[in-house]
Amino acid sequence: MKFELDKYHRNTSNEELISDLKCVAKQLQKSTTYVEYNKHGKYHSCTLCRRFGNWFKVLEIAELSRNRTPFNTTNEDLFKNLEEVWIRLTRQPHYKEFNKPLSKFAAST
Image (cartoon, rainbow, N blue to C red; front, side, top):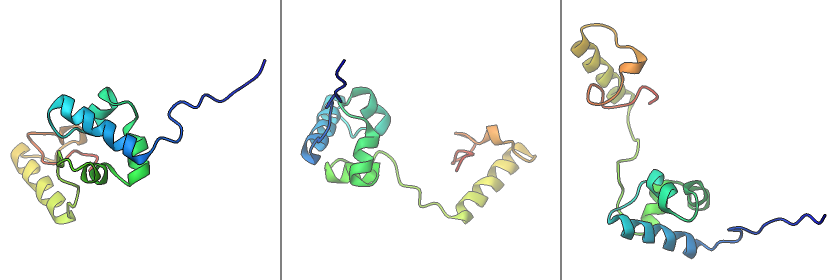
């Protein structure tokens, strides 16, 4: 039996990756998230991120708008959010309670 590596999606050009992303955005009629791209795209979002740096950079190269703001959150913002959640609950919040609309940030942040 002869073993041969399947050349599935090997050596895909930058242009092909960006073109596929633009096609998905056009199909969805909006700038796509990486989750949406994984569902509808030909490639995986990790491939694009590895190639171009990160998802926001991929969107920039494809001339698509950002679908959310990047995390340039300061510790002050996080502690202010913690304080606001604590006050609303009138007690120390639990990890699982850090979600919208109660918190601006996920607990993992």
